[in-house]
Image 1 (cartoon, helix red, strand yellow):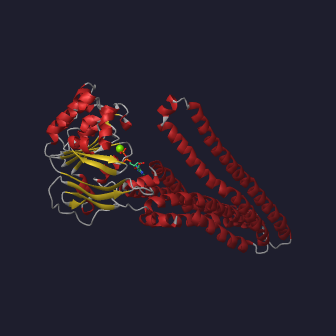
Image 2 (cartoon, protein in one colour):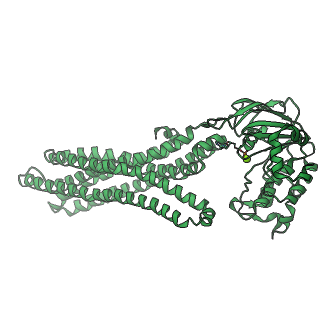
Image 3 (tube, helix red, strand yellow):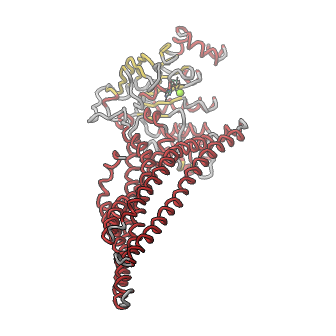
Length: 575
Ligand code: ADP
Ligand code: MG
């Protein structure tokens, strides 16, 4: 929690204003019982109506002032807390934007979302409460004791008994309650997880007839959370009556002992009435304090979770200045590259060396899990290599800024991701200022024109969230068009033809060949037919290079390649 307090700086002024306002409000509350006792002792007892009206009017003014302070304090505390929440959210968001993929792997996307939304809201709410109570509770407590003492010193003995009893009651309740609050947070996380899996996996759940099973799983998590919440609320519900009993017994004791002192002439009726109110204020301040102690652990759980995000630093950092590109544009070279995912025992790829030149098509083939995507993700520097070097345009990728590097690359990921918006907007994602002609041309090369024109609004047809209203193959073609519109030096296709039928695949590749002419092209594919005519084929097996060469060369030299080919093509196709 303390670590987050450095972000409070911009809100210093409203926070101080709130504290002052709360102090003023407390003062008015402390002053009112004294005024009332004056009315009783000097007005009611002597029958001085003029005095009653005068002080009564005065009381009204003080009460009004207190009310205005209270309203203003609400306003400023909400303003400060929402501003703080907004600042934290944007800090977290921009910080996460700098993460490389390994930090995403580490924290988890879903958890990052809950941390940015739910946890920050939690902090925001607690901050409002804290601002109001932090100043009010000690003020009311100390001020109340002073005022009570000034009304009647002897009678404060009653408080000396009542307050310890109250504190014991609070401690007992808090001890039972706080662990349950923490448990609730964990159970809420679990419920969220189950719900998320259910919503994202709904197709799988239905097709495997697991609806009942999932229902049961959700109900269990739900029931678990409910039981804990009920327990917490029972304890908290017990708190109020216990407090009230202590408070009311204190009043009875004050009236009892005060009555004796009044009949002995040591005290006046008004003073006793004021004393009762001060006793209430003191005890309520203890209740406020105890509420703070309940809330702080809850907020600190959230604060820790937010801090975890803010303190995670990205592995991948830009160099201080952009590099000068020395070598040939579009030239890419892997020099003995080894990479393993964080926490993995074995490297995902090891000792990879090869180079690609402009105007050439390089293909990568290999079984699932052989490291094809991993290799490709290293070029735009989604991850950094463990050892070795990746050189683009004669410059180590770590010496360029990420922006400098990535603007050279047209990347088509294995998972075609589209954004909510129109088809044209999605294609223009590759190049913001692309003209309509460029967009249409890219779509045509990607063999997407046919299905786009069959859609009711053509290029202005909207893509639903997550691209659910287009098929897998259509998604792939749109994401190819998005890369094409960039006209980059380097094209990277990660298994981007897998959802296309053979005919479309062939047509697309023919069109691509003309389009990508002088660029460097890297294609990952499963089908031998897709890559057969590449200038260079790299066969990956278990993260290692099992052969590099043309189709013809590999057929002779690489058993792994031959095996892949045999499993896919008939004899005559091979020949
Ligand atoms: P391919 O694309 O050839 O099917 P990948 O490059 O995706 O294979 O995966 C290679 C290996 O790296 C696999 O064994 C996989 O388990 C592992 N791997 C892939 N992505 C991650 C990740 N984000 N974190 C940890 N391990 C991963
Ligand atoms: Mg892959």
